Amino acid sequence: MPIAQYGVLAATAVDRRREGATGTPHYQIHLRDAAGTDYRAAVNVLSQQAPSNLLYFADENFRHPVTALLPAAGSGWTALNSRPGTASLDFVRGKLFDHAAMHVLPPDLPGPDNDLADLLDHYVQHAIADPNAALYVFGQRFGPEPGVPDKVFGFLPGNGVHDVHMNQGNSGQFRGDDGVYQDGALLIHLPDENRWAAVFLAFQSQSWHTDDRTGHGLPGSVPHPGRAPQDSPNSQV
Image 1 (cartoon, rainbow, N blue to C red):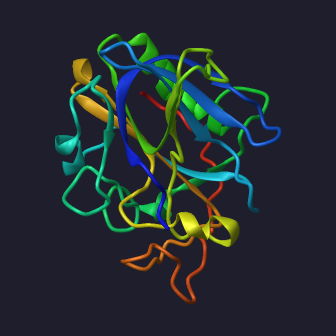
Image 2: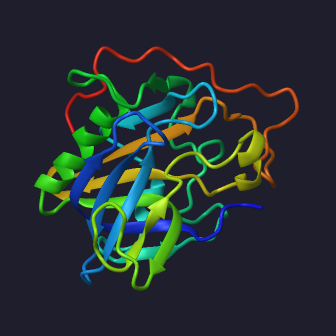
């Protein structure tokens, strides 16, 4: 069945934490909405299935009709119906970006601007520094967990969003998460600069030819071949 509680978190980024490249690492973002509620966004930087390095596409000047359908900045969590014509994202059907332009990045390496955590840091640190920046995190809700502090940032109650990546065309144990119009991503609105930035992530093991009803990979479809990383994942913000 598709992932449960799909939606978008509209909040302000206040902190972040890198988890290196061991175990099942994530890039963790601490966010807070206009009502003062805290959230954590857990962004995958390594796949449990081979090939382990993720695909990414970053758009410094994202232009798409979906931005006009988003909830107000700072409004917190909004559940979304997984269907076209809404703010729900679909990497295959939504014409959000050219998936052939995606590159592969390792999760964490010594040195600057050469891994996925560096890429995410580039955008999130800018959003933290800009008091007017609004972050939109698409994925699956977890919590709230009354009485249970967040395991990374310690706020109460534990609360947030994960599956911030493509959620269709999966294989193996993750095939049950497939669905259409339920993909995860990061969108950043920079009103002072009159533009949006976007980061889209996917696993190399996922198929990009999927059933319009179930989101399962179609017979004969093959995963994205991946491309070598660019000289630097960052440019402006």
